[in-house]
Image 1 (cartoon, rainbow, N blue to C red):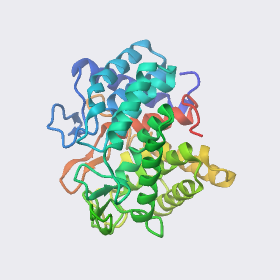
Image 2: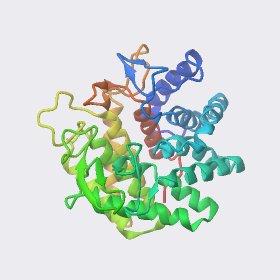
Image 3: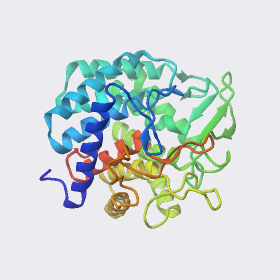
Length: 368
């Protein structure tokens, strides 16, 4: 851990111990969230959208520690989800394949990983609705989720690896549609847009996890912040960069100085003031955005904000220093309205927390 700043040594060691315990005591099982600090395992998956994050976390802890056994675990957990490269029932294939097979390919150019990424990207592109010009959510052909902005990079990646213009067009059009309808004029975001699938006409907003349909569910906002940054990386389209910057500025304007937001910015007096998984996503996205922006002042602001978020998450309030608590990052929320995984750990929160630490430690390469 010689290249990792000292303030993150404790995090890496705690993550190392918890991930090793997870793969040793619960082999081949992939959790989503904890209940009273214990990973909920073998749960009936809503859409099984979290299965890539454990493998992704194992790739990250391998890069942070250089322990060969973590690479072996990372490869194994990546292979466990390979069959889902043809899963046409969900919009979350980016969450599955970019942290796992994508990390594998970027690490050593593995030719088989390249083919897996291309096939998974083609599968996700099959959700494209030509009338509305978007990738539809698992809810149906009428539904556009803000979450898909963090999955569409898989289609961009497949386009880049395969040279297929069709994939690039689909990915770009999805981003433009999301930007037009789910990103509001003040750079707040809607969770879901409902469309007439035949005409492509936008009908209304909805939310599954926010306070109300016209509010801003923060984790979705963070998916968009990071997703538009990655869309810019693939396309160099100025509109995507300016959107990512607007979303980042909105996050910083509406979040307390410590950097940790609630589940929804518009909910008055929230019972649970923290959504740490959203903060971890924001920190990683802000670091990527700082690499991509050409405005040096903005880059400085975004890097300092990410550092501030990470400093807070590394404190005893958020870092699960209790060895009996099985997750890494406390005070995350899976699904607040359904009262599922509230004020717990989530596997994606742990993943993006480690990813942000990898970036700020320069263990991971710059995004742009």
